[in-house]
Amino acid sequence: MRFVACVGLLDSLLGSLRGCLDRFPDKRRGMNTTFGMGDIGMAAFSVFFMQSPSFLAHQRRFEQGHGRSNCASLFGIAKTPCDNHIRDMLDPASPVLLHPVFAETVDQLRRLDGGLEVFRRLDGRMLIALDGSEYHCSRKIHCQHCLTRVRGKGGTEYYHAMLAATLVAPGHDKVIPLEPEFIVPQDGAEKQDCENMAAKRWLATHGQRYAALDAVYLGDDLFSRQPLCQAVLDAGGHFIFVCKPSSHPLIQQYLIGAEVPVLEQTVKRGKQRFVHRYRWLHDVPLRDGRDALTVNWFEIEIINARGETTYRNSFVTDLAVGADNVVELAACGRARCRVDGGVAAPIPHRPGRAGFPHPVLHDRVSLTAA
Ligand SMILES: [Zn+2]
Image 1 (cartoon, rainbow, N blue to C red):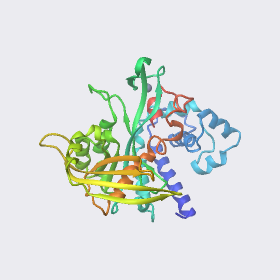
Image 2 (image 1 turned 90 degrees about the vertical axis):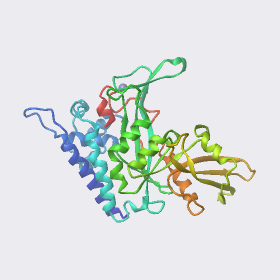
Image 3 (image 1 turned 180 degrees about the horizontal axis):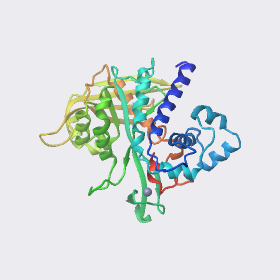
Image 4 (image 1 turned 45 degrees about the vertical axis):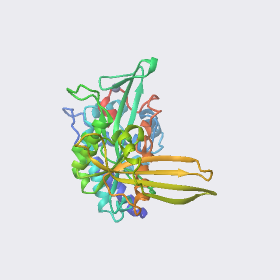
């Protein structure tokens, strides 16, 4: 994309964010409105955008003049509100209020020449990786919105997690984050919320809209279960989910004795040569029972010059698999690994850093999520 087009796009994306923040509920009554909700929201966003380790560090840099011109020109902020004011004003706002920005981002990219085309794979389809990501974990600090788990003898661990949905494409180094779904205790639910349930809610809310992009959902073995595969199909999408032999013994039984087509390719990586071996089988039941969904299975195995298997993974999909597309299908199935907990997560929330001084206090839950 040309530089001028990039700058224009950034301006327009930031404009759409500001427009959304301007519509955030403002609890203030009376005249104390030096900063509008848009200014406050953009000030908070600039902390993340500039990758500052904390609000305070960001503010100090700003006061010393570092980055001030950037903030003024990019975000339209001449003065920054104090961190407590930002927290107070933004905390009551639900993260869902930001959802329109994700849809507008995709729409703006779609209208831009080549904006979304670079993401098209598998005959013009778009890949959406679904992946759980934790952004807080502690044995001490917790709140009423925390999920809990017992870890060995160490007692209860408290954590916050979300299901990240990300537009990805193998061979392309950029990703586009889509609406997240937070994994939080649900009203009236007996079981603790989990990635799988969050994925079902995500599909019910956004699935039909992304069906227009001909979406193919990618996910790990957790997702290759009938209810979620069915939910993807009901939302007009397709899926390529990891399918571990240990969690799908029935498929393993079908593979024994079946005539399984094989495709082998020699791939050079530096001075080393590897054999990529693909196998696939159509029409295998996803589980026991008459109502079992029929899916197509495929596997990729990477073998080094010494004949040792260095990588093996298998997948299920509703898409037809053949010698003409199994290589691309496997590349797409593996594309999700790149966003796992890393690229798609905002940097200050990267797992492992959540225990350190956080840009947002833990008890300000909806703000942390936003
Ligand atoms: Zn919590």
